[in-house]
Length: 305
Image (cartoon, one colour):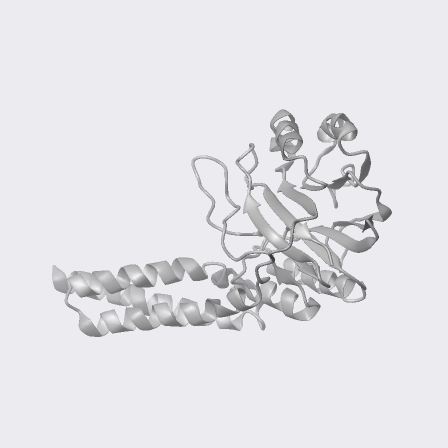
């Protein structure tokens, strides 16, 4: 029996090595980036295999599993390097980002959550027309708004306590993702906010086109920039690494899974992000409680230069 188990787990180890290394092909073949989203899962599996091989007294295979763990740890390293450093400044703005899950949204729970958070800016994604009454109800708290909820190829909304300067909503195109953007002036300190909803990784070519368009759109923006939304990519992916390197943005965090949040599942992947550049400090990024969406809300506290 021990020999059978050793053979089985040995083959599993070889397969995981092959799959892990295949993720390196993501820059050339976009679908291979799906592998990179599982980087932490591979690391956890490799650690479990070390224990299995120790129990099976398969020393060489245990060393192989250790090598697999080490390889995945090295491949995950860029995610730690491209994260924002801790900012000890007092937060100036509170920002909430939430994919409300389209027609599955629960307006009452969302409105209650937003009122309790009392954030300065709120980015909502997958906002359908039936949610318009909820947004109108929030008008007393958020008098400024730009949205494209009636456009199937957009469905975003940006709510703000502060005046929106040059607000704009952009529909999904062949070379750009759906987005809402505006500039703000907070006590003489200006910054640009950019909210996006990127394509899912299962349509790799579409997602890569979205990221090409986003990178092209962000490069010309001058001054402090805050970027948030549903990126459908994890910190471990080549896609997210490429975005940060190409735009000079840094992520607010590396851990804190946000999807899938619907029962009986529990969050496994961090795909909802807050990024910044140009002197904006990310003091804290945390998840809110589940409010009926398959995504957890993201709450960010930021400081301005």
